[in-house]
Image (tube, rainbow, N blue to C red; front, side, top):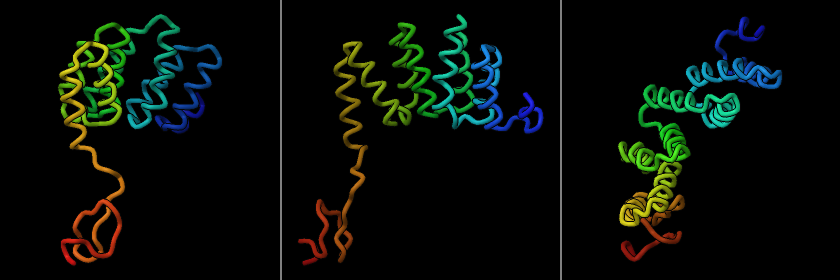
Length: 169
């Protein structure tokens, strides 16, 4: 609390306040600190969401987690990690069709590796193999190898590194 009074809504102060509150048995205090942290710094969602989910679940307020995720999605539309987390929450509630819809609503999100993997697994679990095939076919063309070589002379793409290719020899 002292750190929050001195530094306001600083990310480290909120992080530490949540951890200290949780260790002291103050689940409500931890939840409040982490909700503020997510509002102030949505980039910390990967570290905070699992902690917040567990704290809300342990306190019998699991439905509130869905509201937090929905608020994050409305504040940061198109953020693939947050959208994937909301879809995962819906899937845990047994709402697979809603989880699929959440990711499908934004085609750019579906191309993200985390959200795309979540969508592929949802398609597979739902028996939607034709949708799974279409998703994978689309990803196959969209994903490029992180290693690309070009001919040192003409700049043409090549499958192996070389100084001269057949196009410029």
